[in-house]
Length: 68
Image 1 (cartoon, rainbow, N blue to C red):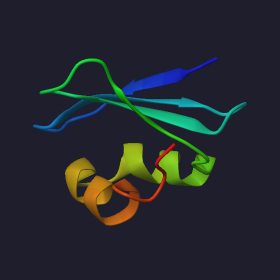
Image 2: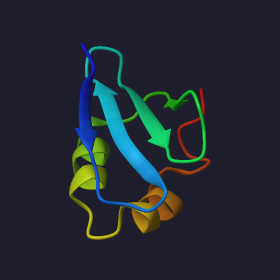
Image 3: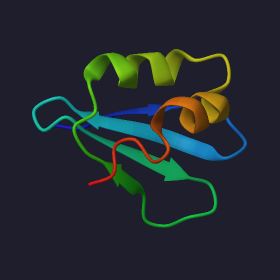
Image 4: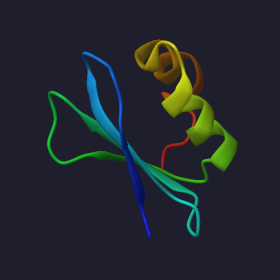
């Protein structure tokens, strides 16, 4: 089951994570539907949702790293 977390960001509405499949989903403000990322460790998801800057964390640690 996917766990969804709303985040404070001008670019990202919410982030989802399914621990059974290690799949993460990002719901961006300017896109529909959400983007999917594969083989994401749960620790990366946890760090992402608790980052002081979600957008910066995305660009530094996720973008182009976990493409399906």
